[in-house]
Image (spheres, rainbow, N blue to C red):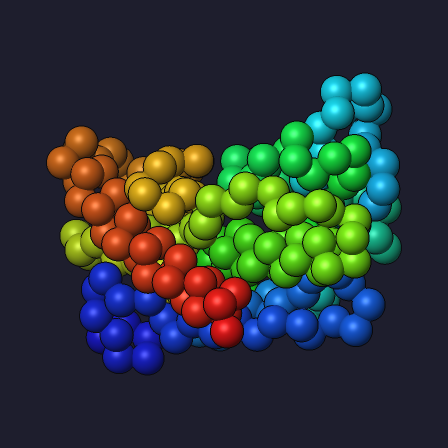
Length: 238
């Protein structure tokens, strides 16, 4: 039996709460079961040097876990003086994913920064961050349009992410920590609406897996992403 008595291809209970920050242009708290991430989107009226002069905007992300997001306290990375390789890899993934879903030219010469802070971790923190960050970014753009900083909304294509795995020979979606730590195959899928792949991260933890298994995992993952996009739309259309 999986967590919260769900089926193999069922997500954990998903909840996205908008407007959780008083000051940020866009914000949400996203929950995939017991994984909770607080996300803010901040707007800076300038761009990095590599974008300067192109007339394009930029979207980037920062990611971190609070000390008691996990079962035992972990030291803040700021106290250690550097970010871990895992942290850098995840925040780059979030940034790449969000840049794939927005018309950067229509943003103008400004930067959107998505800060993803994991309050509580039980597997799937990067996929929850991406799914919630899309909503936070869309809310920030709406506020910018309302404030007159944007003449029109940049084109946005819905984007979500989900973890997929093989556990005891079965395809599962949205793995919690116990499932993720024992999976034979571990994969993260990021995709746009319409089953358009943005990024696929997959590893055989024990041996190898076949192309037909990969196809089964992708089918399950795309189904979960379609469900997540409907949740995003219900929040943004409320």
